[in-house]
Structure formats: structure tokens, C-alpha cells
Image (cartoon, rainbow, N blue to C red):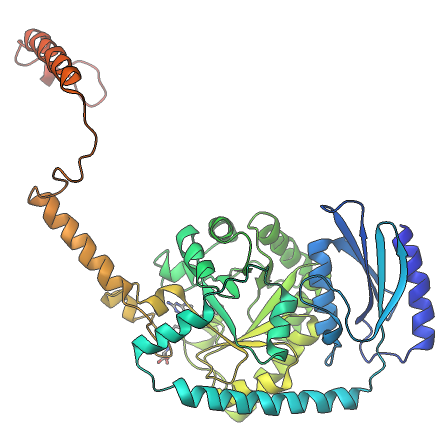
Length: 469
Ligand SMILES: Nc1nc(=O)c2c([nH]1)NC[C@@H]1CN(c3ccc(C(=O)N[C@@H](CCC(=O)O)C(=O)O)cc3)CN21
Ligand SMILES: CC(C)C(=O)C(=O)O
């Protein structure tokens, strides 16, 4: 209450003295009020005097979203983990359990624009030099390089802000899907930034032909297992399944997204599509305190409209529509956008024009990060059925499926030939004394059974239901 009043006053003061942002929702002030270390409440004042309040998690997302909603946010004032302000920092007021920080938006938009263009130029130069060095490497050496560079000892929680900061620092973002406990453990251990509980689950885990059949309840079930496997470090993003968010009534999307967060344990949700209608949904969900990952290009939930899993944006006009959609999602508050199956040059331009990061799949190397499906990159399903769904843009970093096949075939063979388990895998023993008593007991039981089963057709009189005829 106190926080709100003080913030409203400060908001009024600040907006009368500082130049107005082009985007009214950019947070210029973040207040942290903590009654105890464990329960923190936050309040964010925006230029149009909106006061957003929520839990510590909502604060993080709301700040990211509101900041991302501005084309040129002053994200350099916000550190990844705790919204501490660096640079022009105005210490506003300090009570026993309250801290107030004020962010000033003074720099002219043109200056910032120039800054990002320079940043982009150096980012592209860096990208081309780094890819030319490793692009032709063999599978093995690439895997080794990847393993040593992505396995992290840094256990800090990945947040939407640290994802955005990675793009600014020219560091690539890594995202891999996981659908259950073991895959989540592996993806977390490998140090990926983001774990995506994708609705590709319908295809690679549940055996459907498309992503359409999976339900919200099923997605939540998978999200819960992933959360148990990777509870702390990576950013967990859950795919909103087909039919759970597309309605004019944006509250349906919000309610279902809350389920993904509260029941599924997700940090963020992903929606497919970037039309006006879809961006309204994204804005509503972000305003509700949930971080949103956008997704444009090939949006597999629209397979029946698109006519198949095929590349998008290969015509100039369509490519420009994709750019418009990505910009729209950024304006709506998405913290990043997935670009799926689009020409590399289009993905590079979108990445250049967006402030928020892009995460590509089949979109070339000019995006801010890459995502692949767990089973695809590990070569998990090495049988003909999988060939249908393993897209040609996917590089196989392992052939796990072959090992699975070999292992299962060997087990079957050894059981059938009586080679397994053998002595080595029969670890539980009895003392000789207990064994003697046991054998004695069993032979007595046998004698009893022998007496009662003397009538030959007695067992025939029992049918499946246990009654006698
Ligand atoms: N295992 C798996 N990996 C994925 O990457 C993935 C899924 N499943 N399911 C959901 C979507 C669907 N995706 C796909 C699936 C297939 C192609 C593919 O094979 N495309 C063909 C062209 C097909 C056509 O033109 O009709 C290609 O040659 O790239 C592309 C993306 C990406 N996603
Ligand atoms: C392919 C990725 C981006 C996805 O959406 C999924 O796994 O469902």
C-alpha cells in the first residue's frame, strides 16, 4: 500500500520532469518491498502511471515485458538477476524493508538507434568469423567443442532478462526440448539456457502425426516431470497446445497460461503466430504476469492451413509479413521469438530489427540462438518412422537410437539363451543355514499340495471368475 502511494507520487514527479518515452508502459521505476527474505512483493511504475504489482516472479517478467515493449528499452539499467540498476541510478528512498530505484529515460531515441546498429554490425562480424572457423569441423570435434563451451558450472537461474542480455552481449542462446524427467536432467546438465517443453511432444513422445492432438492436461503432466528434472537453473518454457489460447476471449489464454505456471511449474509459455489477434493475446498474458516466448515462420499447429511442414517466408512479401509479426510480438511484450523454417537472410534481418532475441530452428546462423528437438539432435529414434519427422536442418550430434536398439537386442538374446542374469547379476543370497530351513519348508508344502491336488479335474472346475460350474 505504502509502496504504491510513494510510487504514484514519484511517477507523477518523474513524468513531469523527464522526457516522455515513446512507449508508455516502459518501467521507469522498480520498487522492491520485502517483508521477509522469502516473500518479496514488487511494484513497477510505468510512464503512464500504471502501477503493476505482483510476486517476485511476476515482477521479473513484467519488467522484462514492459521494457521489451519499448523498441529501444534501457535494458542496460537492469541487471539479469535482481533488477539492480546500473549506470544512471537514482537512489530514491530507503526504508527498513523497502528500496526504491528510479530509471531515467533521457537518452534520445536516435542515439540508441545508432547504438544498436553499431552493436548489430559487430555482432554480425563476430558471427561470420566464428562460423567460418567451426563450420566444416567433423561431427566429433564439433561435439567436443560444444560440450566444453556449453557445459556450465554457473548455477545462476536463467531469467528472461539474462536471455535478453545475452543478445546484447553477443552470446548465443541455447534451447533444447525436454518432455520428461530424464531428458530434463540431461538438458540441464549440459548447461542449456532454456528448456522447452514443446508440443512436439505429441509427435516424438506420444507418436502422433502432428502436434494437434496433445491436450493442456497432457502438456502440464510433461511440464511437471521436466520441472522435477530441472528445477533450478534453466529457464523453463511450456508450449501452449493447439486449442488452448486462440480465442477472442483473451482470458481463456491467460487462465490456461496460469495453469502452465502454477501446475506445470513453467517460467514462461510459448504461443504460435504473430497476427494482430495473436499479439493481443500475448499482450494480455504478459500483463497478467506471465513471460511469453513468441513463435513465427513455420507454426506447426497451423499445419492444415499451411498445407504441411514446409519452409515459410520464401517470397519477399511473406518474409516482410514475418518481420511485421515478430515486431508485433515484441511490442506485445514477448521476451524472445522463435523463428522456424525460414530463409537465413530473413531470419538475420528479423534478428537485426528486433531488440529482443530470436531463437532459430531451420532459420540459419544469423539468429540470437538455436533450438533443436532433443530426439532429433541425439539421433534417438533410428527407425524409418522417425525419418518422416526429422527435418533436414537438424544435425545429429549422437546416434543414441542405435545404442538403444543394440542394447535391447542384446538383452533379448541373452535372456532367451539363458545367459542373463548369470551369477554376476544375481546378487541376493541366503546363509546356508537359512537355505536348508527354507528347502525343508518348501518340501513340506509340496507334500501338502500333492495331497490336495489328487483329484485330477479339480483345477478344471475353476473358471476365470473363480466360481465353480
Ligand atoms: N521431431 C521433430 N522435430 C522438429 O523439429 C519438429 C517436430 N518434431 N514436430 C513439430 C515441428 C515440425 N517440424 C518440422 C517437421 C518436418 C519438417 C520437414 O521435414 N520439412 C521438409 C519439407 C516438407 C515439405 O515441404 O512438405 C524439409 O525438407 O525440410 C520441418 C519441420 C519442426 N518441429
Ligand atoms: C521445434 C520447437 C521450436 C517447438 O516448437 C516444439 O518443440 O514444439
